[in-house]
Image 1 (cartoon, rainbow, N blue to C red):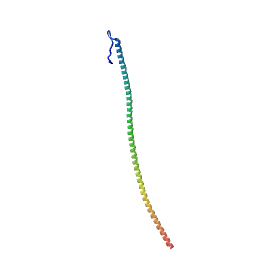
Image 2: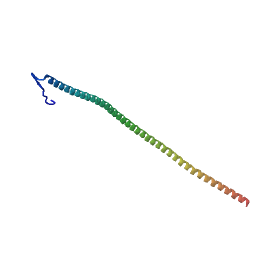
Image 3: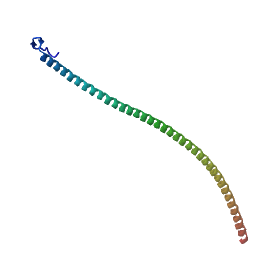
Length: 149
């Protein structure tokens, strides 16, 4: 107890008013402490509710973050795959274009060789024709010189 209580005495024992006052005081203290504990329990219950609510919100946000991460990961993987396909396609097109250009270059080289050969032939023909005309002119000049002389 809060301290030893001494009651006044009367003819039949302790004085009834002192005992009743003491009991009322003890009951009031008990009720006050009980009320205080009830308020603490109520506050704790409210805190627990708030924490559960907050935990639910945080768990939902964590799930959303995990979903977003998974989506971002999927998008990155798809983007990488698409980039790889684009690069592969570009390489294939470049190789195809290179082969086509090499064929065109080879055809142009063959044309150039043919043209050079034709130029040599025409040069030879021209030289031959010029020599023929030179010889004819010389012959004509000699004949005219023979006629004049």
